[in-house]
Amino acid sequence: MSKPLVFEKPLGMRDTLPQLYEIKSISRTAMESIVRQWGYRFMQTPTVEYYDTVGEASATLDQQLFKLLDQEGKTLVLRPDMTAPIARVAASSLKDEPLPMRIAYAAHVFRAQEQEGGRPAEFEQFGVELIGDGTTSADAEVIALMIETLKAVGLNNFQVAVGHLGYVDALFKEILGTDQRTETLKRFLFEKNYVGYRQHVKELPLSSIDQKRLVDFLQLRGGTAGLEQAEELITSTRAYEALEELQTLRDGLAAYGVSDLVSLDLTLVSHMTYYTGVVFEGYAPELGSPISNGGRYDTLLSKFDMDTKATGFGIHLDHLIEAVHPREEKTFTHCIVYSEKQRKDAIEFCQKLRGQGETAVLQDIKGIENLDAFTEKFSNVTYYLGKEEGVSK
Image (cartoon, rainbow, N blue to C red; front, top):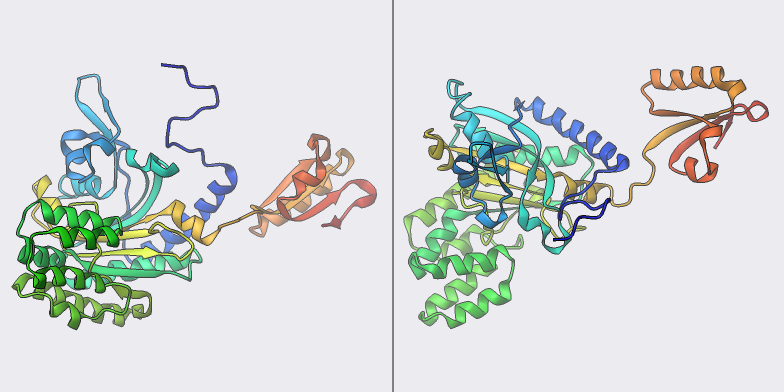
């Protein structure tokens, strides 16, 4: 095995350079302000968790986990998501808290599969968990909060797709039973491979009526589908209950005034197997990957001996930043370039700007190799160089 190059990083890991760090910090602060106003409290969990607890409960495939051993030989994992760690804390350190409880977080998570296609294996996630409320009102709250949080950082052009895993599972069970064929079709849906889905349905040993039901199911997406169309494809009580929940959810989202940003997509499924009911994803037209996702997970807490229901969302901060700031160039507002004789006046001017809440960099001209290149990244440049004192760019 060859030794890594001196500048080489582990596969899938990235440096966050100052410009991006600053943008992310500002965005995170704006989102935190909104979430706090809704009554959510922030917490942190360890970067490393036990494989036998959080690792298995996370519903992340085993080959996607980063594993290591501690001094006692126990298997640890870098946390692959935040929902499972918070479920662990809710069932232990916070078990005496009155329900429902509202928890928020901003943390780095690690998934090995993110290396594929040049995607990072480490990324920052921002989100909330509403634990102990099984009502559709809770689902409406977290979706509305996600929308307001995305708007807080300046994202205006986006859409949220909402589905229900209870409907998908009920429809597939009616037609296919509970065998491997169901999981195969779900994989096609998760990958948005609708051509492959249709081809696979044609190859299944089903009646023409059932094949048509499975193909017509694909029409229940894209914003033009209605609950009435979905009703025509099913016969089971569980499927009807799922549609009733979606209708109630639709009314709740209308009360929040966010219906124009939400569309129905009953083909929506998740790779996180702990989701049990309403699921949703946020999309920006500039990106090919979701910027946010979430849903109801009513059985995850039971893995930590806490019998309660929950829902929540997570925002992929890097995707969000890419959608809002695709080509951010200037990080700072002011730069004051000074000569030694004008240092005092330059410092006084800089302190005045900072006292007004402005970001200002103070720079001795002797420390600059290329003046034009250095000052290019600032919106305003003021020179204290004797004769050119007070000249602004």
